[in-house]
Length: 299
Length: 292
Image (cartoon, rainbow over all chains, first blue to last red; front, side):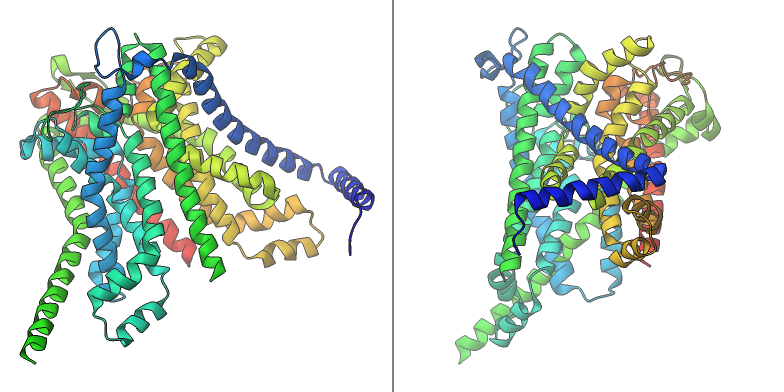
C-alpha cells in the first residue's frame, strides 16, 4: 500500500473540495474554523512578537559595560543582579527542595489513604499555589523582615521564595514518586530492606528526573519573581556581603530600571538576559520531561 | 548476636526518626498557610477596625496624607481590569485550546504547545516592560489619552492569562471521550460542528476551572499592572483613564508608608487575600464537580 505523490495530491484536492462544499452548506462551520485558526495565530503571534521585539531592540544594547562588576549611576551594570539571582536561586532551593521532597515522600510513602492530615496538606498546598506573589512579599516583610528582625536581607528573600515554590516542588515530586511502580517497593520489602532503604535506594533514583524537572520549573519562577522580593530582599544593587544584607535580583533590577525611565537601553538589555535565562530553563525542563516519558514508553 | 540486635535497634530508631522528619516536612505547608493568615490578619484587621469597615471598603477617596483610607477605587480597579482581561483572554484562550486539541496538525502542535508553555514562564516584569514600550504607545496613538490606562492593563493581562486558560482548557477538551465526537460525526455533523456542539459543552466545567484560575492570576498580578495602568488612586472612570489595582496600591506605597498608612496597606493585602481565597474555593468546587 504505497501512495504515490500524484495520487496523494488528488486525494487532498478531493478532500478540500468536499470541505469547501460543506462550508457552503453551513457558513457557521466556516466562521468557527476561521475563528479557531485566527485565535491560534494571534496567540502564537503575540508570543513571537514579544520575544522578537525584545531581542531585536535589546541585543544591540548588550555591551560589555553592562556586565561590569560594579553598579554605578553612570553604568547601571546588571552583573551584581545576575550574581544575586544565582545566589538567591541556590539559597531558596537549598531551603525548599529538602522540605518539599520530604513532604512528598511522606505523602506518598508513609501516609495512609484517606488520612485527614493528607487532605489538609493537599488543601493548604493548593491554597499556597494560588496566593499572589505580592501577598508572599508582604508576609515575608511582616514575618522575616520585621517579626524575626532580619531586616531587608537575602535570607528573608530566600525564605519567602522557598515558601512560594514549596507547593510546586511538592506536587512534581509527588507525581514522580507515584509514577514509580509498586512492584519496586514490593520487591525491595520482599528482600528484607527497610522503609528508609527502599525509599533512598529504590524509589528515589527512578523518580529523580521527574523531581529535577520540577526543580527546574521552580528555578524559572525564582528567576522571574519580583513582587515577592522588593520588600523582603530589598533593592540594593550590589552583591551582598552576607546572608543578612540586601541585594536585588535581575527581575527586581529590571523593574527598577524601567520605573526610573532613565536607562531604557539597559532595561532592554536586561530584558534580553532575563528572557534568555527563562527560555533556556524552560527548554531544559521540557527536555527532561520528554526524556522521562520516552523512558516510560520503552518500559 | 548482641551486635545484630544493636544494629536492628539503631535501624529502628533511624526509621522512626526519619518518619517524624518527613511528617514535619509535610506539615510545613500547613504551617506556612497558618503563619501567612495570622500575620496578615493580625497586622491588617486592626487598621480596618480603626478606619471603620465601611469607610475602608466603600470609601471613595484614598488620601494617606489626610488620613483618609478608602479602597473602593482599588477594589473596582482590580475587578474592572480583571474583567477586561477575561473579555480579551477567555475567547482567545478557549478557541486556541480548541485548535490545539482538535484542529492542530502535528508538526504545528510540536512548536505551538511548547511556545504556549513558555508564555507561562516569561516573568511578569518582562510582560510589563513589553506593555510599557509596545502596548502603551499603541493605545496612546490609536485612542488618545496617556496610553497608561485600564484598556492597556486589560490587554496585557489578557495576554498573560492565556497560557493558564489554554493549558487547562486543552486538557479538559482532551479528557472528553472520543465517542462524543465520533457520535456527532456519525449523525452527519461536520468536524467544526461536532467539536463546538458536542465536545466543547462536555468540557464546560474543566474550561470554567481554567477561567477561574485565570481570574486568580489576573487579580494577583502586580508588577506588569503597575507598569502599564497609570496607577492613579481615584475612582476608575473610563477605559482610557488610569486605574490602580489592590496589588499596585501595596507595592507603590509600601516603600515609604508608616503607622496607620502602613497598616491600611496591609489591610489592602487582607482584602486581596480574601478575594484569592474565595476564587480558590470556587476553583476547587468546580474542579470537584468536573471530576464527578
